[in-house]
Image (cartoon, rainbow over all chains, first blue to last red):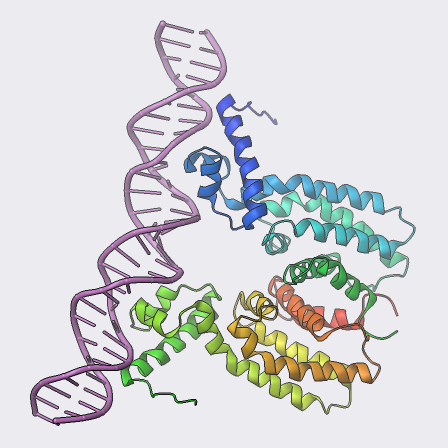
Length: 187
Length: 187
DNA sequence: TTAATATACGGAGGTAGCCTCCGATTGGCT
DNA sequence: AGCCAATCGGAGGCTACCTCCGTATATTAA
């Protein structure tokens, strides 16, 4: 079924060099980093880059999949936390940190969450499911409004992360996320 | 002091044609719309566009200034509203609707709010001040947390607007803004 | 009306990035 | 060693950005 021919040695070498340089470039210039530049630095022709990664999204998805899986694991750990609402907040904060690593990443993932045809959508599906269990538990414990959905919370998190990226100092996302969880009103 | 020589007739004509087409193009393609396309549709050379508006931001700023002023007026009206917190929320919602008119606009204005050297920063300063009076009043009435700043609220609003733009249907921004104001917890 | 001149126009041209296509190259197998 | 499928590389066509400067024209003065 899942027959995967091993890559030719030169192909595998180039594939890995490309991923290394892509990581560097995205971290430095954001998700809009020049693909030609990545190929150049990897010592590879632009055609080779496009053969391995037909789209920019494909390249990003390869870099990000491991992180999504890690977030899914994290959610599974937190499901036993004694404080369901705090656990949810902690998990969202971790996710927010992850989406803040490349400039522009948060836009990309927010879109991916609503586009089933996206490669990223599939690749973060497990994480989503694990997260929704955290949400359900918080509701069952009566700690979270019943009418809020997992998708809304994920989007709120993305919004906080986005906003944090448009604030001068660091920690903006955490502050905003806390505000949303604590509420704006005087209690 | 403020001597402004009247524009030559052809210059004024082109200036106005450019603004019309820019409005069309930004509404249709978002703030990244092609400037060459705008010039083409205005029946004007690209050099003419750049002479009147040295940067994309200058063009946008000219289109947006009137809106900022309108939002400032709106804030001054709402300052007498009997419900200070609701008035604040209403005002923010109106602002959110305005930033949703062009794709990409919300990123631009959010950045402008933190960059004093930006033309947009200056052009929305009056609006900002008027808004901060709404915030102060809500705090004085004991309806809003003391430790939230106007800038944070503006950023939260921008975040809600941003997120609304990444949701399939309409009305996303209002729903998210309401969530933030009502709080996530069960009360 | 015409001439003079400041003002404004237009688009060629250099840069850069996207993506495709196909002739040249090379790894791996016999 | 020799073959061939797998892989490579980059030229080339496209679009967009922005600058520069020779050309055209609105305005003013004679």
